[in-house]
Image (tube, rainbow, N blue to C red; front, side, top):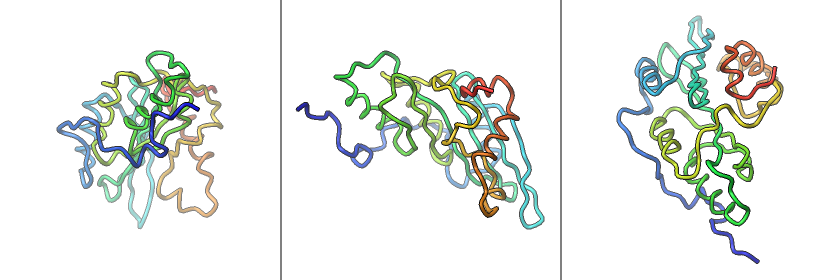
Length: 206
């Protein structure tokens, strides 16, 4: 029996190893600061919706970096930064043979720690991931860029119908408070409104 080359639960055994850069995102940052930071990295606004609360209006915005096939959904609250999520897909630079798969899965968990990861066994095909945008987002992305083994999938390698993107949640706080709300249907509607090149970027088949 071949001994695994990575811990049973690798996330619990890892230290933060991603690159630190300045400036970067941080909790309590302003909305304008956030837009400047991600704009400098390469993101552009591709969709903006208004959501309402307490007789006030705020925004849910989607940004895309089409060079790296990355998507951000973010909200304001009282015109200030409220939160959001980055979505992407990562793939191995070269085909990983079976005898090295466990070791590369460990490396994958290391570089994507702090986020949610899809089926890591499919790293040769493409693994989607998501992570909060609120803390050291740019350093996180640059760590992937500088990885020895992985790269951003551009476009996403996994092809989806518009009904099959369960890890995307493009929903406003207002919508999430509706009893029995269907996040998949809401997300699908927003995906349909994205520019064609962004839909193609994330592998959506219309």
